[in-house]
Length: 54
Ligand SMILES: [Zn+2]
Image (cartoon, rainbow, N blue to C red):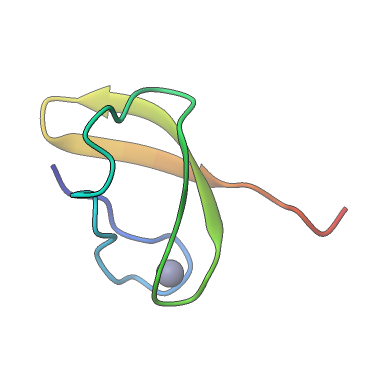
């Protein structure tokens, strides 16, 4: 499964999230942004940025 960070466009390492599912919140190691999984379609994962600043 591949998830490209919305912020820095780097692939997010998902190996530490074996139970990844919709609604799962994970963090990009490259830029530190928090992403929430919105949908999983096969090996394509969509996510949106969780805005923690507001
Ligand atoms: Zn990132």
